[in-house]
Image (cartoon, rainbow, N blue to C red; front, side, top):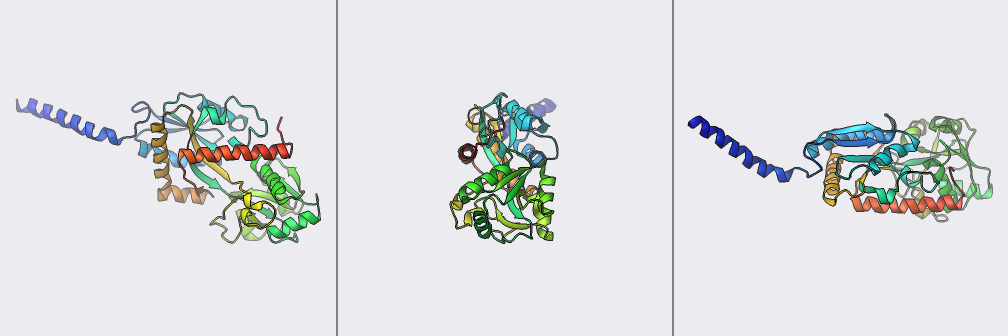
Amino acid sequence: MIENFSRVGLLRAAFALTTILTPLAPSLAQEGAPVRFVVPFTPGGGNDILARTLAPHLAEKLHRNVVVENKPGAGGNIGTSFVAHAKPDGNTILIAGSQITTQPALGMKTTFDIQKDLAPVGMVAEVPMIFVVNPTMPYKTMEEFILYARNHPNDINYSSPGIGVPQHLAGELLAGLAKIDITHVPYQGTGPSVADVIGGQIQSTFGSMGSVLPQIRNGSLRALGVARNKRTSVLPDVPAFSEVKDGEMSQYNASLWFSIMAPAGTSKAKIDSLNAAINDALDSPDVQKKLSDQGFEISKSTPEELGKIIDGDLALWQKVAEDNKLSTK
């Protein structure tokens, strides 16, 4: 009798405890179902590093397994399409780079519409692009570079890892806002693009922090500016492009950014729960150190703020592409 009573009492206590704790757990999708965290590129890149750094912390915050899945191909469009057409139940999320806002401007065909088929969840990080030149060049500041370019139209080249990549568009935006004529030279990848600036075959290039920071520090490249609207703590003495008092440079912002997206139609409650988990993970000292060591800067946002960033970038790069007749078709 006492034994039976104890069992009943334990069951009742367990039920009461569950009732108390259940409202505290994130109400995301089906109970116990894993979250598929889709990386639309191969392992080792920026998207992949971010996803694998965040995944264990998201799992802890969400009280669910978070499985990172690489679905590369078509410039990130295969993985992105997979998420865009997934069931909007909170079980599938995407780590998206800022290329999702440049591809439509360049006429790339996709099986999804960024604004209609994907729901913004939150920003994760930024990677500043640094405008660098060969140190033997006569210009030491952005103002001097712009003046030289105006006095020597089409004499200055800038390299990029390829046609239509963010570094290419950053150069076109610079040319338009500074009202200068500079020539784009596309390469097959970041390595040779930067190497030829160091070797003097090309005068300048835009490089992500990780691709040019060692060369800036050893003096083989000279940093003239951060290609966005604020400086970076890694190179605090290098001004942001928006600080340049010339032309329309105050409007310049071409930062590389990474965010998390979900299928359109995902409920606001689930989006908000995911956003809270992401921001909590980004507050972790462990996450902050790992990302900082890889050249990332933490950048948090609400879903609404990310939506405005996406809309603004889509309009910006569409104008840049139209003004310069750019297309990958």
